[in-house]
Length: 358
Image (cartoon, rainbow, N blue to C red; front, top):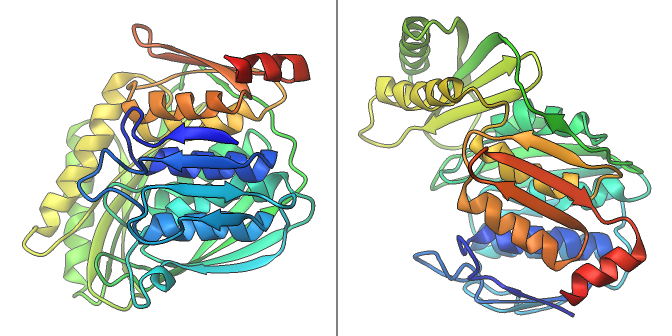
């Protein structure tokens, strides 16, 4: 059994999700202690508990400690990951509606299902745009297209938007199994091709997304970034608003976003999203801070090495690298001075055993 200290590094949910993904893929039993010790409310929240149960469902794992607030979890897979049709609802963890992020559940089970034999369809219900989590639009327009370059065949469809605190969103994930992953090398992003955006609201007047879209286009034009932002009134069970931007370069993709809240003007939401994108553009890097740590796991499972340059070396990245190395699957080197990340998968059994013994 691999022991994982959930308090390591940034001490958040990424330790849990990566550990669950790798346990499902490798069949290795794991014990995670001090879960989310670095958070204001440590232990398993609704989206984390849903991720645990989702990972357990796809590999028929025996689990102990699967309860809200639990700080310790045993996860013992009893079968290889099974492709199929699944439904995971974050609100089941709370016996009511929840805005826990379904994108985090998606990222937990995506690679195990992609590597499994057969195709899968997963319905996910909960929050689609949640603070401190990748928004659905980022998954759709940045994360999955980048993983496609590495061999992952998956697509998502949004049926309803879900905002904090009511949730109620729904998305479908379609995954083609039998994936063989290849590495990715991104040193230069090339020229900016376009910036496209979405200003979306649910259960709010149509002038609000129009104001967000107009403000964003003006700000990006001032920054000499030509952009087209679409205003949209979407489907959802409660009021909510958000701005999401995608920058498409010759060699890479990046995303930025902001979620509205009561008392925050529509124009301010647009300004927050635009500032994040403008700051990234100025960095000159091909990979944004969010994608930097999200690429580690597929790169570690690939058949060949990966190298990429990032806008920022975050504690999310270094923590995720540490977790992956506990499974002995790859050697990950992070050059903080040059902001370079190198992943060398360990494909020989002797190398894996050596890494585990360390």
